[in-house]
Amino acid sequence: MVSYQGDTKYLGREMIAVAFDIGTTSSAVSYTYLYPDDYARVRMVTKWPGQPISVGSSKIPTLVAYRNGQYKACGAEALDYVDDSHYDVAKWFKLHLHPSSMKRSNQPPPYSSVSGSAAFEVPALPPSIEIGQIYTDFMNGDMKAPEEYNGCDTHYAKWLDFEQQSFLREAALEAGVVSKENSYEPLEFVTEGEASVHYALAYSQSKSWLAADTLFAVIDAGGSTVDGTLYECKSTEPKVVLEEARASECIQYEYTRRLVVFVDRAAETMMKQKLAGSKYGDDDYIMGMVAAFESRTKRLFDGEMTNYAVEFGTTRDNDRPKGIIKGRLSLTMNEISSTFEDVIQRIVNSCLVLLCARNVKYVLLVGGFGESIYLQKELTKYLKPFDVIVVTVEEQTKKAAA
Image 1 (cartoon, rainbow, N blue to C red):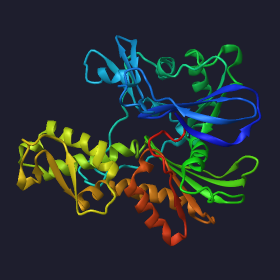
Image 2 (image 1 turned 45 degrees about the vertical axis):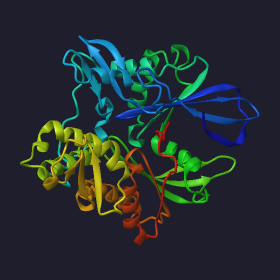
Image 3 (image 1 turned 180 degrees about the vertical axis):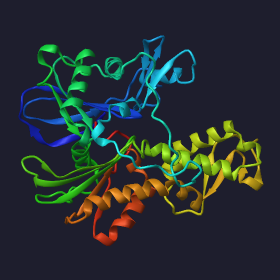
Image 4 (image 1 turned 135 degrees about the vertical axis):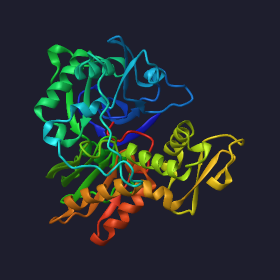
């Protein structure tokens, strides 16, 4: 199915263009067949090895499984080995690629804080497996592309130094994504911020927000960072031309690590406190509740209702004094909003750094966590006194950069 069709005809040479977005927790691929004097039609890959046919999701887990140092599976197929002690699964391995220039010494809130995000270590790589091999295996397993194509990979703005590009180019070469004889011309690196602008132009509520001389910020609230970049639009015709107006402000993993996990960790702490003294306060029940919270409650939370339900069990699960009726845990609006507080404040602070001393008109909010209705509302509330409009995308089921 076509997810986007260009509004101007393509005039270049015939080719297949493939976009890879290898994220911290999930990845995606999109592609288009470019034919001269025809409109580009972009499609998302929605069928992956190990993924149920009925799911049809464009996202796959960024996981690679090994046994005794040998590659076994990646993506959705690697999920089968996550809890198997005979296998080592590489996850969040993108965080190991952070350049030293991004490291800071800021400390996270204490673990016991409900709204604060507990510190936790970036998972170690599987024994004897180098980060380059993991990238190569992941690309080789799920992201092999046709021979005649142009490809691009997206990363945070501050990642795009020569060392990081060379590393990723070498991994793509080893995986057979590009040939050794021609490894530079067909492979381009694009910042997530710039890729997100083009995505938003296709799916935002209105395209009128972007015009020549417009100064705007892109806040990418994703898996491992909040990446904020200030752009100035130089022109929109015949194509969009952007110029970075300020160096990227990155709230990186040194103290933010994984925003989605921060909210989930805060929810876990809150539920344990709420259900203390009940059998439902045991770890097995809590983990089931957190999974249900992550997959549905958190995503639908908008702060409008008095109570929200976390559907974790069956009709046999009841503890009315603790708010559990027929497998549904009732949480108040304040209880859920408390799990968002710390992360939202960090995102707001990142925005304020970008807005200072510049006449910014718009903030483009993208990324997995940027899809949160509650985050969108809160950010709009915080930025309204500055006469800044928050722009979001309507289609929230795909990885934006791909």
